[in-house]
Image (cartoon, rainbow, N blue to C red; front, side, top):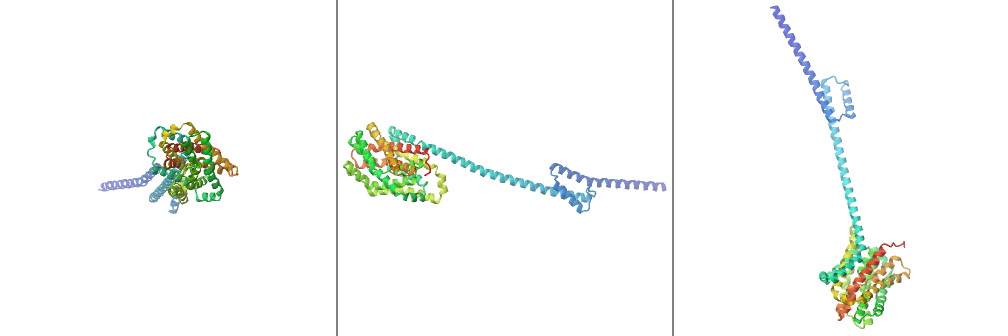
Length: 433
C-alpha cells in the first residue's frame, strides 16, 4: 500500500515537472516568437535607423530595464512602440519625398512650358522677318499671277479693298503708342516737307519723265495722275519693316490723304487741263474708315493691353505684307490687258517715277540735316503712292481707258520699290541719333 502511494506520488511529481517544463517552454516561445517576427519585419523594411534605436534606448531607460531586454512584457511593449515609431517615420519620409517630387515635376513642367513657348515665339519671329524680307518677291509673284490669271482676283471688290486697307492700317496701329504721335507732332516741319514732296515734286517729276520718254497723251495723263495722288497705306508697312518712324509715316499718309481732297483736282486742272470731279465728302469718309479708325483702334488696344499687343506684334508684318500683295494683285488684274499692251516705255516711266521719288524724299530731308530714320521714312513715303486710288479716279473721271493703265503699272513698281528700300535698310543699322 505504501509502495503504491509512493509510486503515485512519483507519478504526480513527474507530471508536475512535465507541466512546469511545458509552461516554461511555452513562456519561452511567447517571449521569443514575437521578437523574432519583429526582427523579420525590421529586416524586410530596412528602416532600422539611429533615430529609432535612440528612441528605444530612452524608452527602456525610463522603465528601468536593461538594454538586453530581459522582461518579456516590457520587451513586447518596447517592440510595439518602436514598430509604431518606425512606421510613422517611414510614412513621413515617403510623404516628404512624394511632395518634393510633385513640386519638382510641377516646377519642371511650368519651366518647360515657358521655355517651349519662348522657343516657339522666337522661331515665329524669325519666320516673320524672313517672310517680310521676301516682300518684293511676293509682290512680283502676285503681279505675275494677276497678269496671267486675272480671274483669280475676282474677289477683290470695292468692300474687299477697303477691308484689306483697314486691316493693313490696324496691323500698324497696334505697334504705335500715343507718345509716338506726340513726339511727331513736335516736328510739323517734317510733315510739311513731305506734303510738298508729294504734291509738288512728284507731279513735276512725272510730267518731266513722261515727256522725256515720249509717252502718248492718255498714258502721260495717267502718269501725272499717279504723281498727283496721296501717299499709299503700304508705305506704313515698309517703314515698319525698314525700322523707320512708323508714327511719322502714318501722319504723313493721313496728311497727304486729306490733302488729296483739294490738291489732286487742282493739279489735274493745271497740268492736264481737265477738271477731275472728286467727291470730297466721300473721300473724307473713306480716309476716316481706312486710315484713322484702324490706327486709333490699334493705338487704343496697345494702351489697354500692351502685353497682348507685344505678343501679336510678330504677326503684324505678315498681315501687312499679305494685304499689300492682295491689293497689288487685285489692281493689276483689273487692267491686265492694258498693261500687256502698253509696252516698255510705260514700265520704264513708272519705275523711274518711284525710284527718283524715293531719292528725292531721302536727300530732300538729308540736306536739312534730319535724322537718318526721318530721311528713310520720308523716302519711302514719297516713293510709294496710293496707285489703287489713282486707278479708281481714272476709271471714274477719264473716258479714255489708257489713262488708268499707268496707275495699274504703278501699283507693281510702287510696291517693289518700297519693299526693296525697306528690306535693304532693315540690314543697315542706324547709328545712334
